[in-house]
Length: 64
Image (cartoon, rainbow, N blue to C red; front, side):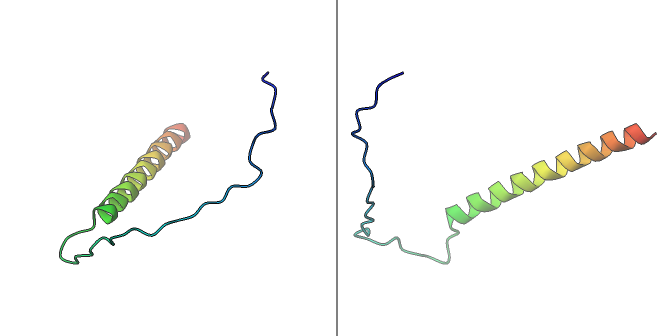
């Protein structure tokens, strides 16, 4: 195992600098981040649905 030199920082300071130009919001154009979020949530819901259906089918098969 490597020997520690004790040079690790005790605390870290993070400074957020504002951007020079703000992105322009155009309500007539769909926000790509929102579309990606909706797709992600839809995929997650579909996975949960399929898993529940598979578990239900397994449970029904075992009860017969």
